[in-house]
Length: 177
Image 1 (cartoon, rainbow, N blue to C red):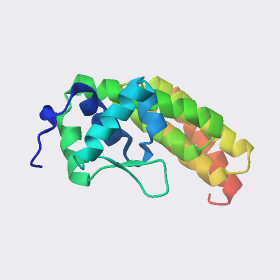
Image 2 (image 1 turned 180 degrees about the horizontal axis):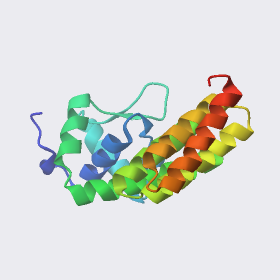
Image 3 (image 1 turned 180 degrees about the vertical axis):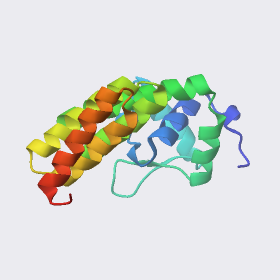
């Protein structure tokens, strides 16, 4: 990477860090929401990054794409407190979106960010709600996966038992017990 990130403007660096953490979920709307950034500021940063060939819009999607080496460099350059804050914002944005779309994949991604931010209780609550929603709507396989993820995040024996029972129930419904 011939062009060090530190030579970029402050906001351009933040856009890159948000994109790196969001990965394949990095869209213009999500990056703007994570950074709580206005349209003109984000557009200016995107133009700067596009001109340098660092960040560009993906093919027919709303996805913002960067090379894997840039992503790796950006993720390792963040200080722990910054990374934790970025994960918290990414988790909050994806959580809000998942509540509208009911997408299990989005819930799992939001939970991953929340766990990385230190918000295990919030992630646990989301995963359990998602698992129950999936079970109630005829998707026991996905519900079992959500209960398994919730089990991993569980901090107490009571939480582990609750999620283990939920997973067993979901697996039973899917015929995989």
